[in-house]
Image (cartoon, rainbow, N blue to C red; front, side, top):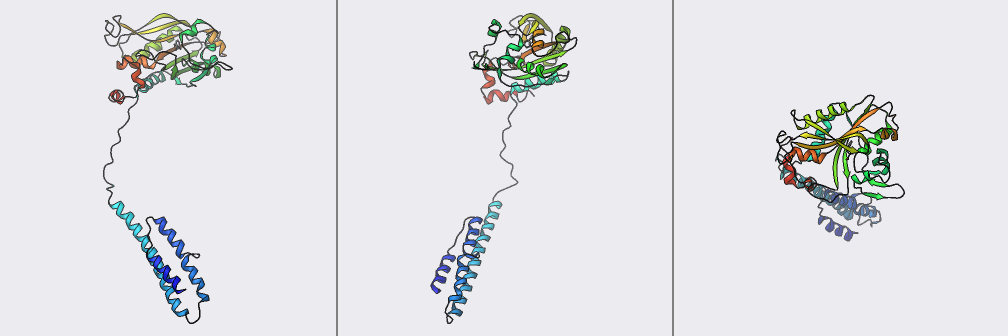
Length: 341
Ligand code: PHE
């Protein structure tokens, strides 16, 4: 018994701990009810009567030693934590984290959204992975019609559901028309995909904002007025517009819209290739076939639609001449738009 006590004393006086958790483990190991020191106390009963006095004293010494040792370990741990805190200057300014900036396409998209929201349009969104019906068939592209070639499409699967990546956000317009009766006044911003070779002027994905207004008695004059308002808000109050006849399966009549060149004011320069005009969007009156396909009565309602590329507007606004810059994540490019807003 006496040897056991001496051995434990030697063991305890050498204890060390490097974390508060370790110190607590030691307390449990030696001083808890089932700990090593308590176990010796339990054995006290079997000590011979003539040794009881000596062993009793030793046991008490052992318990005091263990209690003090572990308390001091815990204390030094707490002091250590204080020391660590004292050596940190918590008043020092943090290392500055460089702020990101908004992407130029987000800036332009937000501006388009806000221009149209001021005249009552709300934003609608839809899936990028679409089916044939929402991207083509509902929009008056008959199967195998050559108009489908205007939009080179990434097909994900042909059977059974004709899954594809949307080539325009007109698919969102279809989805809204299917669910809602007029009046409908929405813009559909989003990413679209076309199977084009990547170059300075084309990319396999880009962004659009398309607009749709359907109500009773909506006319081409309404379309023209809202587009003039948009052009002036976006490119300045002196901007003029012109509409050239064009073709889209889902609009009739259809037009392309040009704005007077905002660089030369219409006199002719390199940007407008000497013409004084630059093309910015496609538009037209929604074809009655489209309304019908989406469950809207074409005898009661009419509407207009338009669609523009966000990259195209950004190129014109910021004079970016290579589309690839928008998706290369080069900070030297992106940081140039800090000051723009
Ligand atoms: N959806 C057409 C495109 O992506 C753009 C458009 C929209 C044209 C609405 C006319 C009306 O090419």
